[in-house]
Length: 117
Image 1 (cartoon, one colour):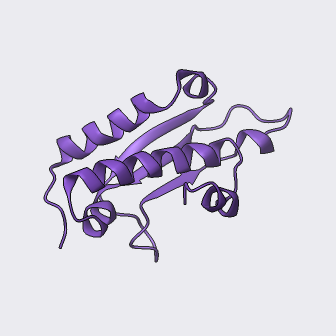
Image 2 (cartoon, helix red, strand yellow):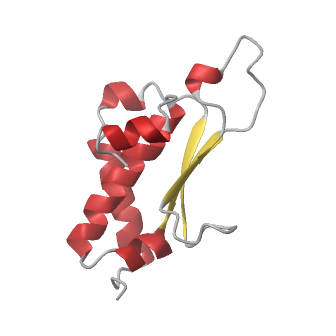
């Protein structure tokens, strides 16, 4: 059963998760925008978040003049997988850190090893 949480409440949970990320790390984000969407497009309908762009570790001297990378947090799948508002808040926090880590070049397998999978 999906958690009943409005858009504003969900966006506030994402904002709180971003506020909890150390400012030293947030200051290192470069050319990235964070979005909240209702549902992912494509075959992975239960995706909680998605990083799209060029990780900092993959950017060379030729990087420039490009649109911002995006980190998208998906409301629908998150609400469907959680059993309570508290669980939503916790899952959003994990998802935000997970996707920011991709921006820094940390791969999926390593994130799972670290407990952020």
